[in-house]
Image (cartoon, rainbow over all chains, first blue to last red; front, top):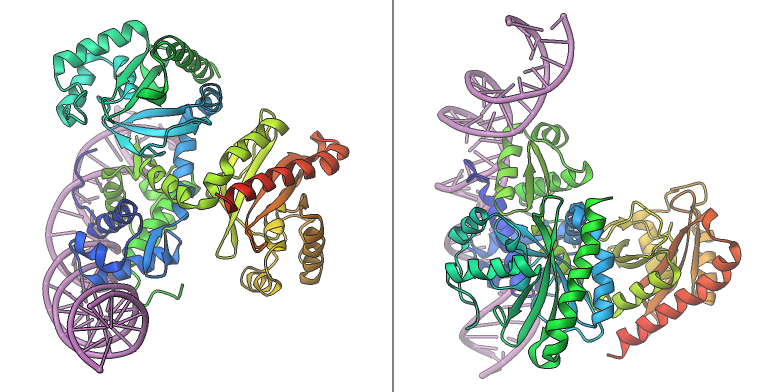
Length: 253
Length: 253
DNA sequence: ATAAGTTGTTCTGAAAGAGTGAACGGTCGT
DNA sequence: ACGACCGTTCACTCTTTCAGAACAACTTAT
């Protein structure tokens, strides 16, 4: 994935515009032009072109992300072999625990939420399908990295660092490796408000035939909503159980 | 949605490239260059630029749709108010019937699948989230159009026609309006192999406070897998029931 | 094994077209 | 009614995309 020798600047600009619209939850021409390094009229032309194909929606004077992206996004997800194998089990786990259940894969050293299912009592978070997060600050990411070779983990840390996201985030490399060693033993990972204050998660890796992780599943819940007993005893078993079922489906079918 | 006065051709070309990759289930540079009216080197530059941001994945010499689209696609869907209201009920219906359950919305006169849930016994179809279909040839589309003003239906027919997709597709305008009248009475629509041979569906509209449709839900199943009794008695009730729950959630919360 | 097809990639010149910036017509708030 | 903002349009200019040829790395055929 070397730097493009001859990047198409217009494509970059278009993607930037689209990403800005997403970030701002819809935006007008001027608002976008302020953030991207081109004038209003150029932005306007981009938006009209995108709107023509429903990649953006014009609602009054605001532009929003269009449904055409859904086709490509859902398609991309369906191409991921783990998605098919995992989906029904993730749904089931959400149903049983009543909490928010997530499926995460690794992509260029970061985590991407591939699918999520909400139980009746699920927390509302900033996570959504397709969102990317640092791997070191979530139970999901740690479960995933626990089952990758040490040198691969180091490469990822070299590239993305261990930025603190809350006061609980592990920011020391040695400490992080020690944590992964423990996760390897337990076959599950726990996140104590390491990415978001007030949120804790239990995650388990989904590994291939060589015990290398291909994804991770987690249950997320508010700190004060769940007693420690359920969190430390019941959830790990359930999450590992689900991961196991997914592994079987993934590896032997 | 007037034609853009100053379209950005590069954007159009990029979108075309991406859509071709999707259509071909992954493609190489030359293959794409053959279908779009630009040379290999230009296509190559586009792909490298897209790959840089993970909008396409390079696997060997083939390019595939990247997961970055998932973020935008899922985001677009989450912005649709009906999605939140409907999702859990669609899941439930799939669970109860063991069949394939779909949620469809209207977009510029065509239908877009917003969400689907697969029961244990669900058919495998060519439908996926984000896919667009003609409204006249599916139970979903007919249920949706049944609860739109006649002039709006006519406008849509004027724009998209009533193309035959199988020998059972309704292609006559009068006949189609009669069908809609009946659907309006029953509050559900049936599709007898009108889009795909061997497939039949039952769909119900989801309407707002003014009884205008905002979406439709359906259950799809192979003709020979389900006896008529279940198809004509049980399914319509179930589908209408689910639509009702979604309506309540949508309109009063 | 050699040759004739492929493939993807790199490079430079030349033509295409994206972007600038000013001006117009709206709509909002003061 | 005014000013300030918005989105939109247009013609000119200079950025940049694209075509085309040449190359390297494979696959297939001879």
